[in-house]
Amino acid sequence: ERWLVSLAGVPAGEAAPGQAAAAVLALLQRMAGEGRTARMADLVVAHGASVLAQEAGLLPAAPTTARREAEPVGIHGLRDGSVALGLGLVFGQARAEVLEALVVAAGGAGARHVEPAVGRALLVVGLSQEAAEDLRTQAAALGFLTDPADPRRRIFACAGRPACGSARIETHRLAEALAPFLRGGQLHVSGCPKGCAHPARAPLTIVGLDEGAGLVVEGTARDVPLRSVPEARLAGAAREFLQKGEI
Image 1: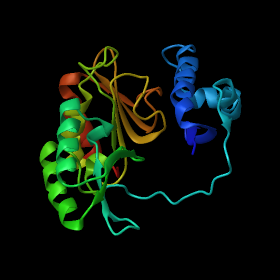
Image 2: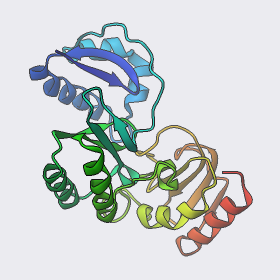
Image 3: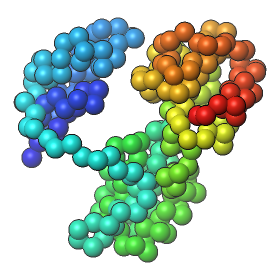
Image 4: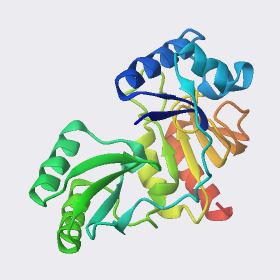
């Protein structure tokens, strides 16, 4: 049994269970050595995923078959007749006490384990259908996303102010306020130009600046904003843009 390690979405190498943590730490240290603005995607472009993997002590990755991306949120049948309950993390984050409450509830529902899933989600595995439906109600009360159509599934937001010292705006509060106005595309709310939550392009990126914030259309948090607004007017300006646009 081995762990597959991907760098910026690129399968890079494999590691035995006992070596995976050390390899990941080595990769993180390698990235940290490039400075605060470094991104693994940039290192992959500059050096190649295989080179970085070899430096970290990973074994070559076996060829993999591309899989169709699936929506993790919902109830999914398993081969043994049980089901897995997929829950979304709001903006990919959750407080420790909330996660603890979920694990306790999952144990009470008879789950075998809880595991992370691609797409900023958690899977509670080994439930009966009835237990999954009951747990879904409890999870919603804890603040987890239980509807795959929830617009917050399409919003990328970093921790923001005050959790991050680099952030210039309160990303979560703004993202929550704008979610009802998001029609079908993606929205990125970044506390600063680093763009940690979503380094890629988005139809609309709101980025915190020293004075207010900028609105970037079809770009990243590092790009020049189309428009800059004071923080006091930010929510209204972004809402107006979403209502007029096709995002």
